[in-house]
Image (cartoon, helix red, strand yellow):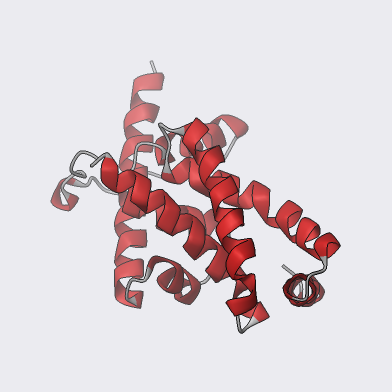
Length: 184
């Protein structure tokens, strides 16, 4: 995101806080696709619920937008609201235990990255434990910094780094497994 885009986004937040409905609509249009993707990855087997959570996220955000003191913090703030909603739902359906981190194979790398590879990555993300899937989406798809992710997840910076490391390893394992099954 360019400096101009960041400044414009901050302006939208400030205008929204003063009651400018046009600015709020534009902010919602800007962030909804990204939040929708994030929520779908957080709740891979609950796509219909992800849409409901998106609506609830915006309702929560609109109600408390006036309490946001720093317009630059909006991205982390809105993702935090979405995350809290998703985790409440996930806690109801305790997922199976993640793969043991000691059982991870060596990294698998492929020289070219095709559209099929991208589809495989997106599908494999759905198989990861929620805590790893979340940080991978926030870092590599949303492009957030480690510090922003730590703020969103309310986890120490070291935990974010650890989750990213093990999440990438698990993702590599899943992709390597699928790659081997697809080859003659």
